[in-house]
Image (cartoon, rainbow, N blue to C red; front, side, top):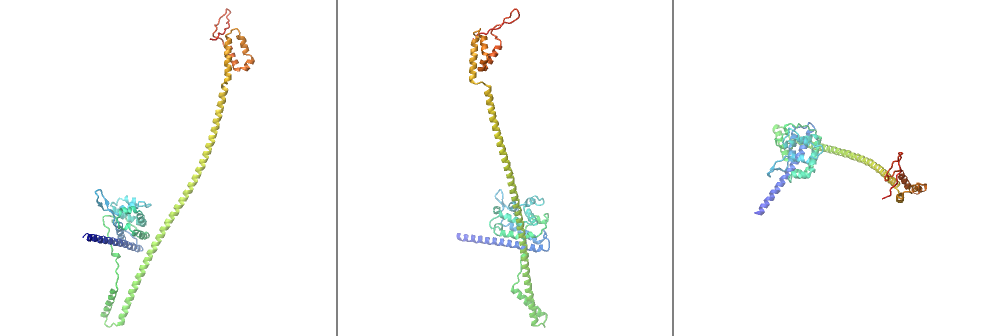
Amino acid sequence: MASLGVGLHLIRKRGAGRSAAVERRNLLTVCRFSVKTMLDRSCFETIDDSSPEFVNFVSILEHILSHRLKGQTTWFGYESPRSFWDYIKTACSKVPHNCIRSIESMENVRSSRAKGRAWIRVVLMEKRLSEYISSALRDFKTTRRFYEDGAIMLGEEAGLLADTLIGLNTIDFSFCLKGEGVDGSSPAVIDYTPYLKFTQSADSISSDEEEMRTMGSSGSESSTPDKMATAASIFTEQSNLVTKCKRFEQKYRMALEQKGYLEELVRLREVQLSEAVSHNKALQQSLADTHISHSLEKEQLEYIVLELQDQLTVLKNNDLRSRQELTAHLTNQWPSPVALDANAVALDTLLYRKSAGGQWEEYVDELTSSSFQEEFPESGAALCRHESLPDVSRPVTHTESGGQTGATLAPPR
């Protein structure tokens, strides 16, 4: 029983996989047919919201973008249904000059499905639907996060879908974003009727020929076998001509579609090439400007370094000169130790001889002589100053004639 259950599970799984593959193939085939019918219709009239081909194409594209789309998990662990607009606004946010913000800010578009339908119309008028789909497919992590296994957007057919949609760039669309087509309340229903083709078999052709013969024989009893053979040959020839004409028409349409696809592809590559060339020129110009600015900055810095070195040399020379002047000034201002010792000996001798009293005048004359001043100039000057000053230690006496007597020096203590 267990093996039987496993076998039934495998059979169901394989059946589900086959049905999913058939569904993907059917959606892509119908999408390709829808693009072809719109290309044919655009040769004769403008494609707008009222065109049945466009309405059917939008429904097919919605089914493809919503195929096996994951639900949004709520706080309680349940999955709520999600629209393909949530995937598009996340995966296509890096497309240059995108229309995501414009659609998000539209006042008359509220629901997520309505925003997705408005996005389809806007990118078709901008001729950038294939560019958006290709950019979304390149973001594989986001695509993997939004879609389950077996989805069209995760398969190899998605690249073919983007290539198929390039042909729509040759059509000039005109839409009104406030009409009923943008309303998200109506479901997307695909009409398969225009893509069903009736093929007449050989048995049906032979039965038609028998019916024509029967009608001819019943209508005219006097008809001969030659006339019947002629009518049959004419009918066969007409059917052959009609078949050939249809084949030629189909080949012509296919060649016309391929021509339009190749022209659009060449135009897209030329635009990309021109953008790359302009970007390369801008980068080269920026590199040249940067090189020039760096060269000028280097020259300025070298000049500043040289100027600072000159200033440092001048400051060093000034500092050395100031040190030399200060040393010379201090050396000239203060006497040498030998002179100081000689002055001290002379003063001691002077003070000692002052204590002798009577010999003071003779000793002063001796010290103020030219020979002593030449030998001890500073001591002589000091003695001259002492001689000119009065001695405050000797009392001053007044004579009767009003004069003052001289003072005598007191001996040193």
